[in-house]
Image 1 (spheres, rainbow, N blue to C red):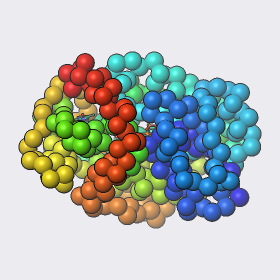
Image 2 (cartoon, helix red, strand yellow):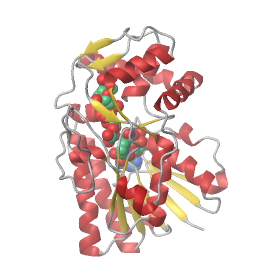
Image 3 (cartoon, helix red, strand yellow):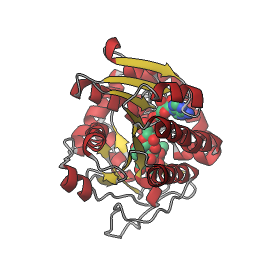
Image 4 (cartoon, protein in one colour):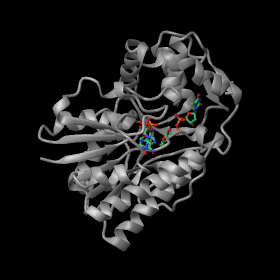
Length: 333
Ligand code: NAD
Ligand code: DAU
């Protein structure tokens, strides 16, 4: 029996991982530690068996709460973060508190109790690639983050590496590309555009929309993280990606087409300051060393399923829609 803590387990990717683990590992118990910020939602964990899931409402930067939970755990899978680049440009402070101080607090607890730690990170720590560059990020690409968000994620990765080397903490790191799927907050690109169309608002594309993201279905991210947690080599970093490069313009037009609208019926709005051009992941290490393969590689089908999920779960997002759009409107986005 494994007793694992999932930080940020009420957020988008964390909650999808909790669903995955409960389904795939019938003898594991999951404790979710989540602060329930604007991005956390207990409804994301509805329907899971109460005897296999404990929910703790708390902050990863609260050393007392963290210590008492880690003392009883076999492993920590650390998803909790402030995750949105645009928010980090408006107010970086919570990104420092959660992504840096929160990760430090967890590392000190797993060090004290010698508990296995897996750190969830992002491809954004590597900065960006040129649109016409055939290169992709590998585990050897130098760190070069652009935004307050990605720089705090880069800092948290470096803390993990230092705690491995200096204190012998048993940790691994994974850096994943852009996730999509159910339960993603509607501030993010894909759900924002889907819920715009459902609300009668024209989709909003930053700048010319030529920026490229490497999309992976969140279920594939979950299977990769479980693989690294169980079979990854301590101290190692694994990049997670599913060869899903698309530019933003193509994605908006596909959403409109799949929703039965004119594919050109969208607005170009102000670009994001410092907007990273392109991300692309080479996940050869994960695939060859641990034998992982993505399963949800048909982007059109995955997007259609995601559109269906937001259409069928309007009560999950409608209450937040006006405030999210008002916030974007202030930045001309
Ligand atoms: P999210 O914003 O949807 O969820 C974050 C969760 O963390 C929320 O439930 C929130 O309440 C919780 N949280 C925030 N601060 C906390 C704190 N101080 N203490 C406890 N809980 C706190 O984020 P997401 O998109 O699901 O991302 C999860 C993780 O995956 C992050 O570490 C992010 O950097 C990483 N990641 C995200 C993507 C992506 O495409 N979304 C890709 C690669 C990596
Ligand atoms: O690459 C992994 C990262 O992916 C994660 O680390 C982050 O947590 C996650 O939020 C995501 O970051 P991005 O900045 O790439 O995601 P976002 O959904 O904010 O934007 C995706 C692209 O779409 C980006 O190029 C900006 C653009 N965009 C975004 C919004 C919200 C638009 O064109 N219009 C929009 O309305």
